[in-house]
Length: 183
Image (tube, rainbow, N blue to C red):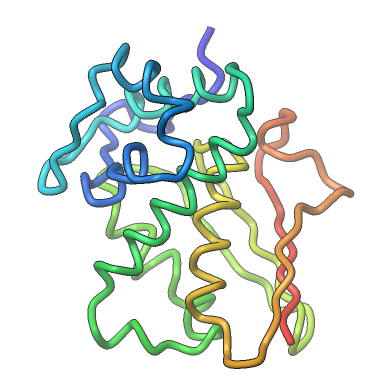
């Protein structure tokens, strides 16, 4: 039985983001899984079937060192996403990032229904990020960690953590809630 399943069997993810599978610090840990799934070579101009990628992520999540490997892939995917940002988005404030992430970034890297991400401003320094996506929680933790690091203000700090009061997607919940505290 598949653990991670797409909402749309025809959904795809762009190759520039998929490069995170092979350009992460823990690549050696997951290389055999990528070879088994024929994803050891990625074309950044190609679109990849999301379910095939989720199958790889399922295997990674069932392997040793899964949290670290998933976060590493997520960070690499986030860094690649930042590298390919249009110039007008590279200097967004954190609030502009939160307001537009789903529409301008997440949705443009996918074709088909890959879920959605919403942000709720709890206070000027506290935001909730609610993800209704098919990915493992740790992948998106890594992706958004990379974005927060890039959009961090000089001398600023941030904390990204899971909400411990609601069941996460990985634990059978319909969504995963992350808390972002910034200073």
